[in-house]
Length: 467
Image 1 (tube, rainbow, N blue to C red):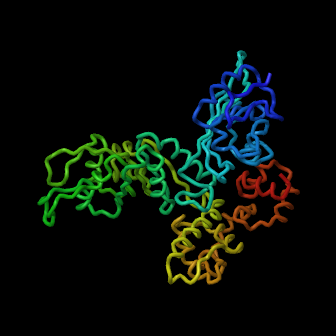
Image 2: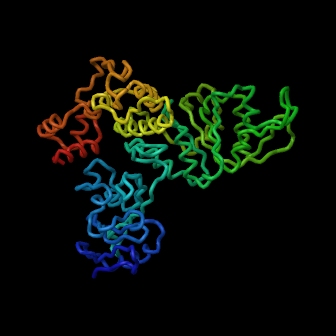
Image 3: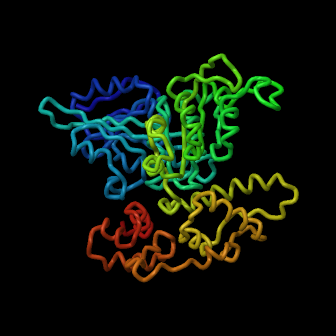
């Protein structure tokens, strides 16, 4: 017999037309979820939504578009096939295979546009240990955006989402976080997003540029000093540790901390105490530690350039940030976001004669094909320069640096045997349709053949009506 949630103005009932009847064993669970403050839905093993609580309706519901009876992938992704067939990780497939919970970060369609959503799915068993339903809890991730009009972190590529998922999980804890990645990958932005998602968001976020402080000044900058402690110390000065009290201390480029100072930094982290330079009173420190480096710390350990005890203290939860070439499908989104930010900045400048608002297709293809050794920082600099040269509001190929317009071809032994340029926007719809029609393997094999992700391939094929 079909069941429904307790009466509520925003509740979707399980007896909505088109909904599949669900086993009576689930009724108590559905009633319980109605009083859960976190958005949740109940799914049958065929991906159909059996019920949605009020919190889900409030956050994800769209007037006139019932969820119950529809399949989850239709609502969340606007797909016509399950996520795994569209190149996504499917938590239901994983939970069905393992008989345990699964968690993943996806980009969902919501009333506010596309958003990052943390999805946790748990199987529900009957008395015979058969899966009869699934409970899916959803939480919007505010630390990143999949839209170009947002500030902060922007992206939707799998490598980017993996880093955001880890950030979202660790944000509410006090574990020290170590951000690893090449220069220009946005480590300070990630650190700030981590702070903003933490319980300390309303307290200070203090950046310590470890590469910009000399060894002689490191201690006084970090711990502060007392009046008269050295020549020029005319008054007491609080250090950066004191300034971060109750908040987050971000040690950027921690690999550059001199060995002599690593001992004092380790003592600060272990004891939570310090003394100002020239002082005798012990001060208590209260901060959440986030560190970052582009250097190979493990190799530095082996070479004796970095203390192992300090390394294990700061690396309780490492997060590797992807290079831009590892998330090339994000380049159009990142470029659009940067142009909006540039326009916002230059719009207030009376001397600005023009502001670029778009990128010509041939220029965008060149941006997507470039390797970006300087990562996101380099992309921003290129767009800033091109914006000054684009007199008619459109960035074209001739506005880009020579290194991007004339990329160096790889040696023959390293040249890709497949047309990987598809991921960079150079394979036309007609060419894609021709290649797909003549390919005899699976979709995943076709994606590998083209050098792209299966998700990107699915989206392109869907737009051509071939998915």
